Image (cartoon, rainbow, N blue to C red; front, side, top):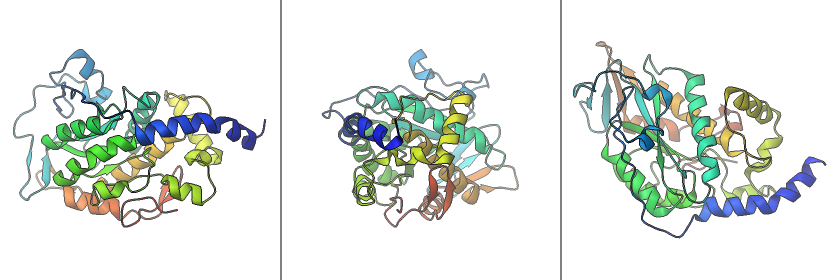
Length: 305
């Protein structure tokens, strides 16, 4: 069966999944996860919450000294001191609509972190949150993230409804976010300064003649990446549902490059991360050599066609 026929057969399934990602479930209250974020140390967590931490974060280092991470000398700055790491949050639908994507997107972000390596000698930890693919869930997760100044940026949310709930909170806190799966148009309106996505929105994809963002699965580079992702231990879904993982990988790579460009290593060995500088560096992304092709962000944070 040729790839065009395969797409026609898969289109109904993709429409169902796209509807879940774009619309989510009816808004409902979701209890925030009990997560205390401690870079490179083992937080005091329930077993369920601990399972959401990246392996690097599950060490047995001593409790985090209060001086290890503190507000920097200026507003919106974070100071890190060794051996503590940069913390990135991943927000996705571990429960609710689109939950099949939670693990592949989490793993794609983790692979990008491992492939990139440390930022100016500082490790990078990924902490995951379940937003239930709802507006209420996205808002609840964003409130947790914004309340902890140690979280530098957000990868996700994956679902457009969760993005709509998260963005006003993240905008107010000046926490930059990059989604590798949210596709409905107009999301930037909810958080114009901090919103970014590494894939085309639905209107742009359709205007270019693509039924969905699945078209990248035909790219040789994406096919090679999916093979390497599976060999690394990444979870692949059935054919036609794997294209979001490379978008997530690219989103993470863009964020890490922006951290390379803006995080400043000090003479005392500490690292200063300025949220505004980081946000501007992400927004200024131009021709980033992504797995899914060259990525440039438009003025509103959307990926340029």
